[in-house]
Image 1 (cartoon, rainbow, N blue to C red):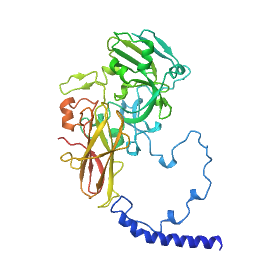
Image 2 (image 1 turned 30 degrees about the horizontal axis):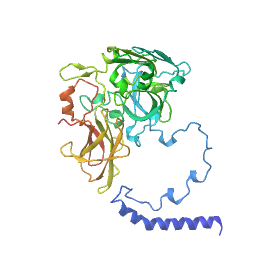
Image 3 (image 1 turned 30 degrees about the vertical axis):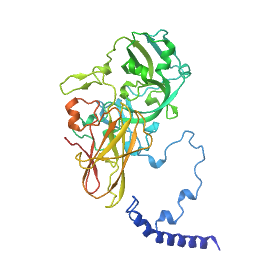
Image 4 (image 1 turned 180 degrees about the vertical axis):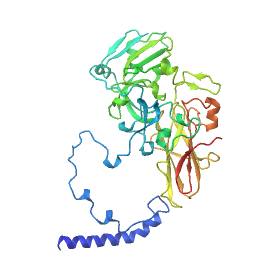
Amino acid sequence: MNRETEEKLTSVSRREFFKKTASVSAVAATSVLVPSTILADDENIMHHVKWGTTLGDECNKNPYGVPSLYEHNVVRRTSALMSSAGDMHAAISMTPLHEQKGIITPNGLHFTRTHNGVAHVDPNKFRLMIHGLVEKPIVLTLEQLKRYPSESRILVLECPSNSAAEWKGPQFGTLQFVKGMMSCAEWTGVRLKTILDELGLKPEAKWMLAEGSDGSEMSRTVPIEKVLDDAMIVWGQNGEALRPEQGYPVRLMLPGWEANLCVKWLKRLEFGDKPWYAKEETSKYTALTASGKAIQHFYANEVNSIITSPCPEVPWTDLEKGDLVEIEGLAWSGHGTIEGVDISFDGGKNWVEANLKGLVLPKAWTRFSYMYKYEGKPLLLQSRSYDDSNNVQPTVNQEKAVVGVEGVYHRNAIITWKVTDMGEVSNVQIRS
């Protein structure tokens, strides 16, 4: 038998197989989400594909691996609305949450906030000065810092102005811009307490000033209780060195607290007996209440959640009535561990309990899931999370009663996706 004859017989045999199994697969579509129309003569099944008949790239063509060319749209995105009068040196780029797999954000997709652009620090010239109310002030090189015993923790990092644009009503039409000022990663470094145990902290030390080495010299004050609890100085992210936009070579990490406090390109830690009242904690990053007074030392990010599928970027326009589809999302809390998530299909009138899946860790993303039989009806889809500190994610009205409508920080009200009878998804706000 020659090769041409063999290929023809093989093609006929495969075609007959798929014709026989097509009807079985169509029945399965009513119980699990699969394409409702099976093409027995699909060219991509019946014929050899290019990549199966040619040599691929050499093993080490890219010494530092890169994503597939077909994933070119999976990128961070920016908006002039999230910058300083359009200056992209003082701006933020958002993580594509609708493309997030699991709870670890790849380093290249981690959200980024800069106040004076991304600094590029020479690690050989890096110095960290620790002084003030300590018994033995010290200046450390990067190599000396890394000699301390290290640990790794999976932690979410969230900008306190995440969802800031939603303060008076829906502003953005995509999940990425509604909630993309956050990411979750494994961070590696040393507990600050470990260093301070060696240096000796004076009893009158009640506050710490953390200062960055970039052009903005970002500075924030941290109470000593947090410093001695779980504060870290980190140099690793997801198994590699920090990226420049994440503070290479060293940044501060305060688990659960607003990302602005986690000073990047760290150069100095000073200990004192009172707060420093830096610019970023007086004119900025304070929480304005309904009375008009601002809460200044307002640190931990609140309990929160968001449905990531469906969302405006991931609609249900390809579903048919009777299809089973998984509703997925992320929940997190700066106060502790997520205990549960509820889902509403009618804008908060009724709720069902979702399942938590995968790792459930303190101050990290937790994934939730709910299997839903699609009925082609309009929905007002919401998620509501609660944590082990008895915090429950509030409605928009409950949030506004506490922080008013002028504050742009620490907004954790329930987000609503409007799903039409055609499966399109849009961002709306429910006042209840």
